[in-house]
Amino acid sequence: MQRGWGTRPLHGRALIAALVVALAGGGTIAAPAHARSSPAAEPPTRGALYHDGQSGRYLLGGRWLYRPDPAAAGVADGFWRDTPSTAGWSAVTIPNVYNLGDFSDRSFQGTVGWYRRDFTLPRNAFARYVPGSARRWIVRFESINYRATVWLNGHELGGHIAPNLPFELDLKGLRGGVNRLVVEVDSRRFLSDLRPGPGNGWWNYGGILREVYLRAVQRADVAQVNVQTQLGCPRCAATIVAQVAVRNPTHRVQAVRLRGSYGGAALRFGAARVRAGGTWLARARVRIARPRLWSPTHPALYHVALALSDTSNRRLAGYSLNSGIRTLKVVKGRLLLNGRTLSLRGVDLREQTLAHGAALDRSELRRLVSWVRQLGATVIRSDPLNPQIDELADRYGLLIWSDVPVVRATDIPAAMSLLKQNVTANQFHPSILVWNIANELPVPTTNREASLISSMAALAHRLDPGRPVSMAIQDWPGLRCQPEYAPVDVIGVNEYFGWYSAGGGTTDDRDALSPFLDTVRSCYPRQALFVSEFGFDGSRNGPVEEHGTYLFQANSAAFHLGVFATKPWLSGAIYFLLQDAASFPGYGGGNPYPVMPFSLKGLISVTGQKKPAWSVVSASFHHTVQIRRR
Image 1: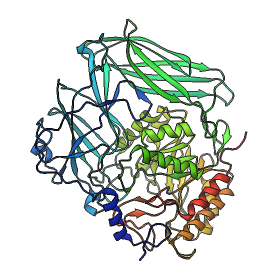
Image 2: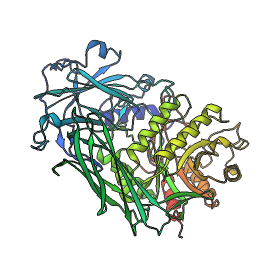
Image 3: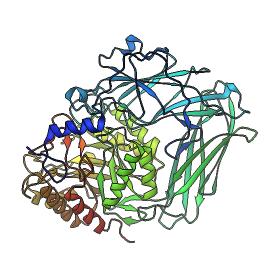
Image 4: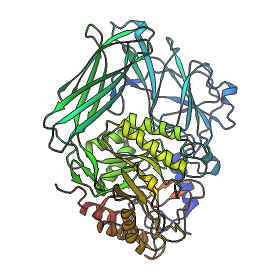
């Protein structure tokens, strides 16, 4: 057994326990029994931690309260009720993980926890010319894992299922003085869920994992903005098509006008009378004669500004975002960006640390992006990312392989809903490379999985016709071609030759990798091909031929990257994983000396030290021509 994380051997469970105590303050949250008086209610603070979005946003930070509910009895016991007493509640900050530091089986299975925020409304949030009857507030949650139900002042507002994607609710029943927002979070996972639980995926961190905002709405809300760029060729003029959902949350018809600009060019949407409770889908287009194209080498951004006004041209709302003009096409089995052939190199990223679980702060998010850039990667593969990372990717020219956690065809409507939410929330980011609709579906493909693939691909193409659709697959020598993959544009192969034994041992020998990739190419000549995963554990000193040593990891990464370099038709390869991360109970990752439940395939240790394989992968990435010249 081993003894250290850096260049020293590891001593697994004892080390993890020590790190958890040091970084997470001992793990689970204990509620003080003596707290009984209502906390001082504070208004939210003006502004947001990311740029893209509506005006009138307020960060609902400050002091929150948390209450554990291991018996799931909180609804029956009235945790949601409008009461000033804080007995049983303890103070926390948001974002927050309520099972931080607890890597037990019970923790992974999930539990129920409750959050509460007593607040007053900000002053001067509305213009004087907007009557009280036309003033509304919306609450926005950036990510909750997994099920959420929300109450305001004792009245249920609604809920949401699935993490990593935002959702909003109208704040009905607000009052003067103190308002009480209560959120039930249920992180228990079942076989029907996406990703199905229990027993696979990444550590089940329960809680409110990203920020919470309030939004002030005057007469009507600029609820959703989609911006698509149409570019026939890299030197052609571009057509920008903008669609804006303007929603009327009031009880009266509202007459409004919408104007905007795309990099200085006017967007004219016109005017409309929006019925009570209705939505106006406003559309506009503009031509950019000589567009500056966005790419990893030149991430040119266009500022988009929208302004909603009343019939007297008095401002009601605004929306601001950054957009980019570029083309992504698959031509004769190659992925082209702005007409240039791609041979991208990237890394799989997980938003988690020992210190904060999956509730990362701004500095931790920026550190992840900094590591990606230092590595020389141009692609990040991940489930839907924190909007702060999306904006950094837009700015720095990092492409995003955007996943949804679909690994079975158990609930096709739920999978399609998840994909739709992802596309709707993130479509305007030029950094999004592909919409990945599923990961490692069972093979050979069944009729139900074929239906999932065709339905998901059709939905993504309809919602965003200018961006390819991908799917990450498991494959091994001797497996037949899968014609059911035809609806997708990009196929990513998850391969671990020389590490895992798949296909009856056919992936044991890493020398079989090169002919295997040639076989995959022959199976899918029309689609662009990626290696969407390859990686190896590195956790201790030892000989190069021994699984799990730093030398084995570095040597194996170099070998695989060398094979990829001989495949001119390969559109990219993504190393798994940027940083070691908690997976699921009993996970050993194929390492003869595992530190459960951690995946040790990261190029960076869980405590932030770069492993020897980092230098090998970084050198290869920096020396690879990832975007070919015309």
